[in-house]
Image 1: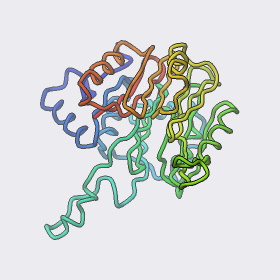
Image 2: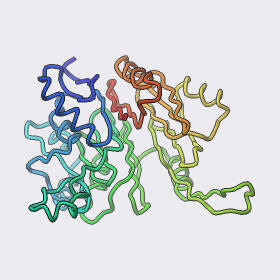
Image 3: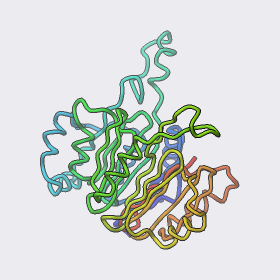
Image 4: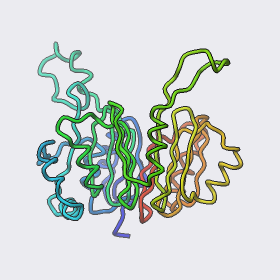
Length: 323
């Protein structure tokens, strides 16, 4: 299918690439802390590969330019992203992290060691039309079409760095920043759940009236098929869902008696779902044949491989991170 390009290898590239190119891409991925497999529109392949390998591209716009451009509507944004000369928007990377120029002499090598390291990729949320490559230090790359309001929030000239992003169809999104602020578009029920989830505290220790208080925050947000469908997981493993969840997911939660030990949950626009518990167990259903094979291969290696992240977009698109 020419409309999408799937990656059944860690390189995430066309099978027509030469072996040496494949090995170079695989090495680059491994150096960034994980291996990535995906299926995503072919039009964005080169741009996406550059983002995944942290390649610099000419024509990156500044934050101020982005703020001005983002006042345009989503239709204009989409046409710009799919034009022949695509300008990738790179997130602001803190000076002390990410990639920098090599040291000019041996004496500065130790001093610049941290600067030479590439911040690991921690998530690649997608809606099937666009995605955001998010790194541990908050740096990010936007590829394809995402909601215009989210793009504007991400590229505020003096705004904080994001540490969590979720995308869904129907224009839905969630973004959380390192300063504790967050924004979203979704059903009204999400507001109460997110505010409660990001402020709730829990007691630790046998005596609920004693011990240190621990912050409980939202760690996973997933959007389902319909506007009202979402699934939110908190850092203590508790969770809350809304709308119509896939039957298999409802059955799993019922069989597990609502156990509060979840690490994250992923949902898709076509009934896909995947759940990982804090104990390392993974369940999934309704995913494409390609994603199903990838998950089975990764999880069949006797604990040697760890599924770090997965997200589903429309038309069987997905991103999967493992190490």
